[in-house]
Image 1 (cartoon, one colour):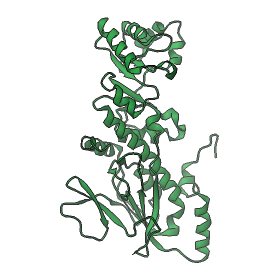
Image 2 (cartoon, rainbow, N blue to C red):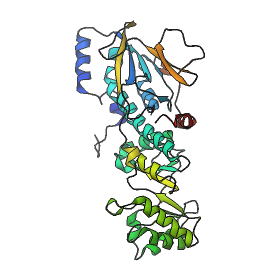
Image 3 (cartoon, rainbow, N blue to C red):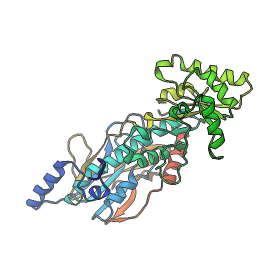
Length: 374
C-alpha cells in the first residue's frame, strides 16, 4: 500500500483484494483437480425500497474482461426488484472465484447510492437535487459516489473528482463566512470575485437568525440563500423556511430562491418541497444502505443446481406490458416480452461499455411510471 490506506487497481484486478476463504478453497480445488463449469447469478433477496437502480456494471466488465467467462446483465440504470437476477456469469469456477468480493462490492455500493438518489429525485418532483455527500465517504471512492448519484438522477455533484460530464455545484462553507469580520463582507466578496458562471448562493445561518441573514444576503446580491440550520436550532424547520420566504418577499426579493441542506432525508424533501426551491443532499445519498446482492451458483455443468433458498437454473427477466416476469432462460419468451439481461462479455471479450449518460436517461425515463411504487 502507499501513503493512504487504499487498495490499488492492480490488487483488485489481480484478485488479491478478496475474502481469504476464496483464496483458500481455490487452492483446495486446484489440488483436487476440480474446476466445474458454473453459472452464477447476482440477486438481492430484499431491498430497502420496492425497487432499486442497478449500477456498477462498468467496473464489473472492466474487472472480468480478459477472463474466460461469459457475462450477461441488465444495462446500467435498469430498475429492478427483489429476486430478479441482474447479472449472470458463466465459466469455470476457479477462473473467477476470487473476484466475487470485488464484483459484489462494485454492485452493492454503487447500486445503493444510485437507488437512494433515484428515490430522492422522485420525491423532489421538479425541485433540483444536488449530491453533497462525498465527504461522508472515503475520498478514494468519490468518483464512484458522484457517478452513481448522477445515474440516479441528481442534477449536479459537489466533488471536483466527479467523472467528466457531471455538472458541479456548490455554495460556500461556514468557515468562509467566518473568515470575514461580518457575513456581509463574505457575501460581497463572493459576489465580486466568484466567476460569472457561479450562482450567487449565500449561506445564511452562520451567526444569526436565518430570515435576518437572508434579507441581508439578498441586499448583497444573492440570487439564492442556503439554509443549513444546525439541528440544535431547528425547532420547526418548515416555519423557519416560511419565515425566510415571507421576509424575502416583503422586502422585494421574491426572485431570491431558498436552497435547503444539512442532513436532509427523503422525508425532509417530501416535507419541504413546496417551500424550498432546491436541495443539497449529503448522507442520505452517499451513505445509502447498500443493495444486499449475493452471487450464487444456479447451474453446474449446465445442469440446474442451487443451494437452499435459491432457485436453480439460469434465468431471464422479461418486461411485458409494464410488468416483469422471470422465467428459466430456455423457456419461451412471453408474447411481446423484452429480455432485460443482455450479453456484456463473451469469452472474455467485452461487448459493451456502459455510459453513465445512457444509464441516467434510463433511470429518468422510468421515474414517472414509478411514482406510485415507493
